[in-house]
Length: 67
Image (cartoon, rainbow, N blue to C red; front, side, top):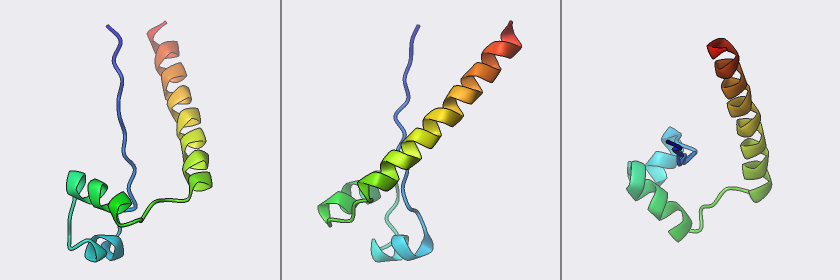
């Protein structure tokens, strides 16, 4: 059965959490775009490409060990 995973990457630093009154998880994620606090698109795209490479390497390595 195929499955998928949703991942949210947040800049969770003490400074950012303080700006949002210590909010975490869903409340924090919902407030950021509402407040206009969104990451730079180019940085997001770079992160996603690197994450794809790492996930691909993990998957390939896992498949090789099962063979």
